[in-house]
Length: 197
Image (cartoon, rainbow, N blue to C red; front, side, top):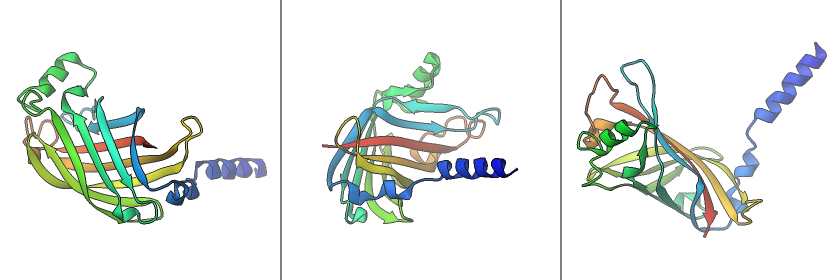
């Protein structure tokens, strides 16, 4: 029993996040851009209650202008190639690119530009900004976590790892096709590694 408890405690310690690794003082202020081999933007929704498909955008840019001493003064911009949407089903990708949804022929990009950054914890922030889809701009707030900020052991440059998420009502951006059979609410997730420029 003692060995079992010891093993459980060791596993719990391994699973705990190391908050010190997210200390922004470990990286300089300045411009950080996406490591495209470690960047993911996905969204999920309910499909008639049967499943929660996950769809990705395969091509996007992220620019962070970091103030490591005063993170609230930092800014973030994301530009997504809307036509890079990938459901892993070719026919559905065509549908998503069409006029029922993202109409990428007329609106080729989706953008997010931050307007406010607020600290919510030691390494967490609410990043509020303007999200533009189909020419419609509305404010959204991303719950954001700095996973790690340090010199990258392979790239050998200062690097910031970020996770962010939010929930959207897609109909607010003119993407209301097939509601409610396909849920109006969408969960958006972002995972990026940003390298010092």
